[in-house]
Image (cartoon, rainbow, N blue to C red; front, side):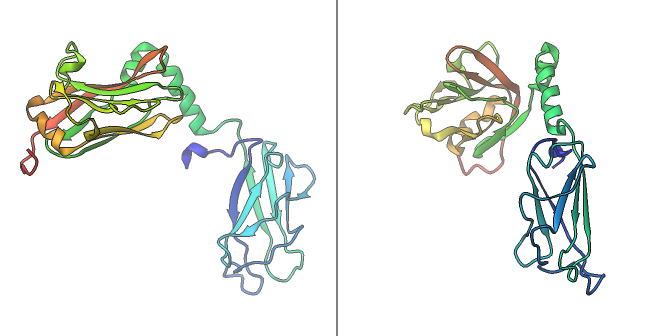
Amino acid sequence: MAADIPPKRSTAYTCYVNVVSQANLNVYQTNPTIVAGDFQVSVDSGSFNNLATLPTVSPAGGKQICVALSSTEMGGDVITVIGSDQAGAEWADAFIHITTGPVQIGEVADAVYVKLMSISPFRMALASDDFGLYRGDTWVQPITRLADMTGYTQMWVTARENRGDTDAQSAFQVLLSDPPVATDGLQYINGARAGTPGNAAITITSLVGGSISVRIEAAEAAKLEAMGKLKWDYQWTDGTDTQTRRRGDLFVTSDVTRVTG
């Protein structure tokens, strides 16, 4: 993936290579025989040494060779791997050139995002997402870029017509607690206390990565017909600090088929 570019210096790295058959230079060798000494590595033009981990054919019996380099073998700016058949009769020489970097694109992007989120105008812009919901449809909405949620005690996803409304006046509010409690789930729907909390839920898909999925059952979504455009947000607390990490507009669209409600 682009976020994993370039290979990171002093970090274990796996790559793949094919070797040409000496018997037929138009094809790659199938299931090449690989023994100790066939593959060697040089760090920053230093001496070549046998790889600590013997490369393997992957998948077994195929033409692709998996080359796993340790963090030590990746400990330079330029890593060179040479493959040379010690028996000398099955496959032709192979060459892998790796240029490392101190950080990867994904890390740079994360650092920039964190920096921008520390600046109020950028934080307000970057923390905004607009979603849509069909009245009467089961609503399943992934929400990402919530930052590390480790240590949370409660989190809420709330939507309402007016920011000044109370929680009890919400179009809907969904709660997740840690440790979980029996009343987790749907708290309010269409300005009233929910009768069945289990008709909605927040599911964490990545705690450290900061992503969740919100589900509201069709029977509850059918109660939102007249709402139009709502304001929604995601709020999080660890019992000490409380943060609103995402927000935006939620457009409730009337459906045509009225199987539900």
